[in-house]
Amino acid sequence: MIPVLYEKQREEIEYFVSKIERQKQKQRLNRFTNFKITFTLSSPICITTPWLNFDSLIGHLMTMESLDREYFVTDKKINLAKYMSGGGLPYGSLWHEEEGLAVPTVSVGYSEEPFEPRVEVLYKRFEGYHASFKGKIRVGSGHFRNFMIRHIYIPIKKVIFFVKGDKEFIYNLLKRNLFALGNDVRVGYGFIKNMSVRDMEKDYSIVMNGKAMRPLPVEFCKSYEEVAPLPYKPPYWEKRNVRMCVPPFTRCELKEKWRKYYG
Image (cartoon, rainbow, N blue to C red):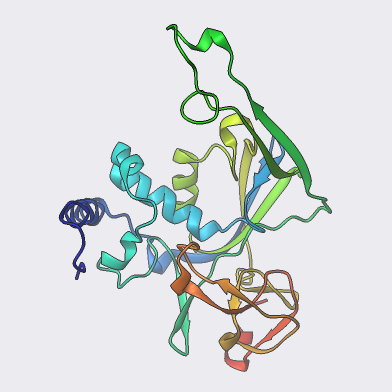
């Protein structure tokens, strides 16, 4: 049920949710397999978070396809999944439940090559030919605002994700919609040169070689090397999704009943 909100906001939520439900795409549970997706990049990748969340990317692309151009006018700070028939689970995710928590079986971005993050500064300054009128130009705010932005980029050639899901569905979804990874793709970062998919015998989306491959709530673990308060499921900006988690790429040992499934 949608809570009491401003009338216009309530109507917008109802409209977008109903449209998503009508156009809703589904992964086929009977075709879920373990696989690895490797993206080869033609330019360095720019990031605003410590890692890339593949489940968030899948949900973004599925929602964008369902809403078409109307996706770009949705309020990005409203979690539409809460109002959908899936019970609040992020759109398009596969889950395993343990002690009342549901964790997506999709890893964060992983690189097999060593890398060192670097910092670049992006400048924007006003140039007169952009204005077709005479008068005072404000460069401290508005359309012609000057700025200097520092951002972090990583000079790597490949980004890898481990997934348990409908391989054909996910591959085709990415082929139709995805051309770049990360932030600042509008200025050329993270462009995808090619994408390859490889079947895996085991599921490495949660743990691989004794290390967590995504933020993993401590309830899933028998022991762990490190712990921190982290969002463990999409949307990752939602404060209610924060739990004490084992951070990605730190050592942990799963509880007995999960060991037979994960790396």
